[in-house]
Length: 458
Image (cartoon, rainbow, N blue to C red; front, side):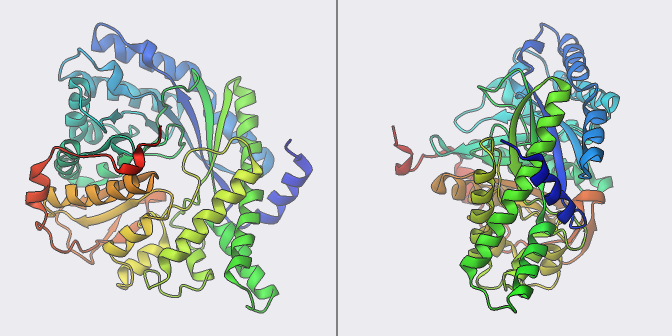
């Protein structure tokens, strides 16, 4: 039972510490939008989104203002569009994506996710059509986001898809060269993709979900770092790591309670079922609103130095424990994100050389997602991009966790150069990709990396 007085006192205490609802995402099943022509599919999709999302933005703004917690993004996530592309021609993906863009603009929505394909065991003609359309779709639309799941614990890693995605990522970058390859920020490649995440670019509605529901993503790395610094000052720095973990857990509990209140009220006003609350510490470029600052509060003075992976593991675990105790509807990813360009402290660590690609990969083994908003040189070979994706997928498959890669090859950019994507997407130095081209033969083998022994759990 949500205690409103308790939540309101928490909101008052945390009001100045970057507590926000990062995303309210309306998830929609669009399988009933299948039709015999792509024009009809586009029309049905536009109509369905506008019908369900007509009042989403106004409702979020009103509820956020009521409690003093802003809702930063309002989004729609669809069941995978690849399922309704079956039987349609090469022109269908762009036509459908443009209809999604128009619907988003009509409703004032920030992003539409679900232009997605799940190909962890194989690729259907419709999924192949969608994936090959991504350079055109993501360069010709503004609000459309895409995800492709290429690996899972049960299926292993579809290396045919991984090989394909390396080239697709590179092609998207050059199709959006005028905006520094930013189209790649709207694509995420997954292992073990969650079916109810509210966070873009990976949000989509999975099988088994209702016709429509509201999923909410609460963020607050600034709240956690402030709580840790207050706790350390109170005890004159004489604290142990288990005591700091407990403080993170308590803070996460309070933030989750506040966020769920917002989500349930939005759902109630819209007359739509409430789904899950995702307590993911998703940073912003705002100084202080940073997962990197939390690591510093834990004693990692140089992010990327030895101990960084252990600190992320402790943070991720404490966040999940606090959220699970606060709500019976926790879902999505719920942990710590480490998106480099979106986190000022992480971007600074890349700039000063303490945080490198290999260390980031190690940290993704214990965070809640993976290599996120990683800017790399635009001339990185497609096979190398595929190999980076494969490494990230392997971490997810072996450890039975969600991992992802959102990699942005920046055309014309060299290691160390600063690229600025603007807004919540922030800026970052270009990471050096060492040993570029050293994995070409491995990627060319393609095929499938079989599921691990641990997958045989039935």
